[in-house]
Image (cartoon, rainbow, N blue to C red; front, side):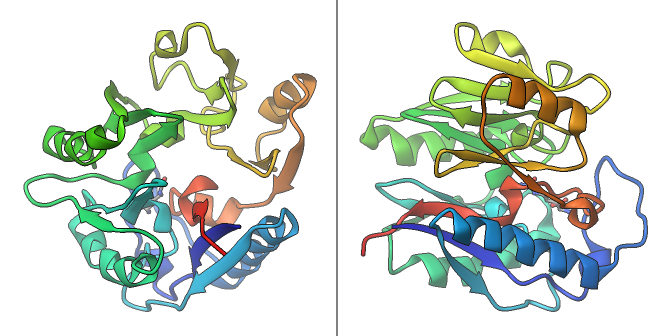
Length: 256
Ligand code: CIR
């Protein structure tokens, strides 16, 4: 059974971290409605959804992806690069403990789950403003015994690696070539975002389908033309908090 851990949106969302965006008003009620639609889309795909309760004092708590990387062999709790986000890790530790042995990134390492793209036994990690070399080294040390290969990747112009590239299917990625060196994926089926939609590279592939934001029709057309089975998701309010689709869940195979 696939399980998605999500989190209720905090009432303090408007105080979220922002790196590349100007702050603008966020309608928390609308964000919550859109987030419920996202959870329902996952449910319709047969994914069980475990929603953590609201953490009112943690503005970015909805972006659960950043605090954990779950592999079949272990769950790695991160140490987010933004200090305001580090307290978010503890409730994820409690949520994941029944499912996996836990490991932790420790100081001076920092790592955001949004910088970690796992494709088979390869783990691409973005060196971003949130993830440092010590964090990458610790990730590599935890995963090497399980035969994963960790590859650090430079990310420029965006928040996380997965703002620049995500997996669509086996051997297929969606990327923005201005934010990541597309040569890394030479030989793969690469779909580039429509140049007028730089933030469109974050898609969530699950259950043979691809959840994709309604905000990017140009890129959606490119994906549809290649035969990807798309599920449109309106995530416009959380986009104002610099969040995208993968950020809002931690999805893994749970026994049972
Ligand atoms: C932050 O800056 O940390 C949040 N406002 C947005 C995090 C988005 N997470 C992600 O892309 N994995």
